[in-house]
Image 1 (tube, one colour):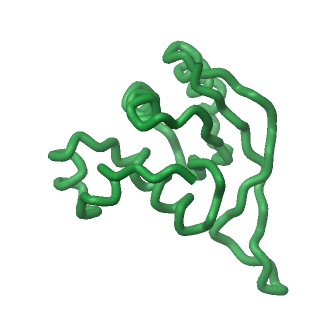
Image 2: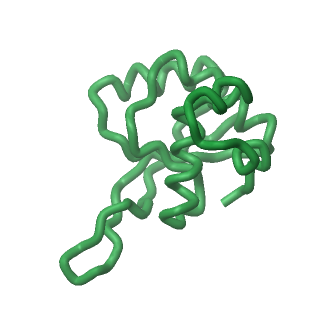
Length: 118
């Protein structure tokens, strides 16, 4: 996974994130993806409509060209349309690691949409 220095150097508290100009949804997806060991940043939680532009801008500023969405929230189609308006497209389906473990201790996998930033 690509390293975002700005994210690594900020204290993970809402006020600090806001003052640093970091979108909270993006920050927590980055940290969770890194902790779990996913190759790409995965959005396993809800993405709000007003998050999309900041997410895409941050990706572009940091040379990130792909990410995944594994969250199954009910407004997913609307978010995909928002990402498309910001220059992203769906580029297939993949699997990502989750924060959950199976009974045998192995990591649970989840289906995810693979997104590309044009």
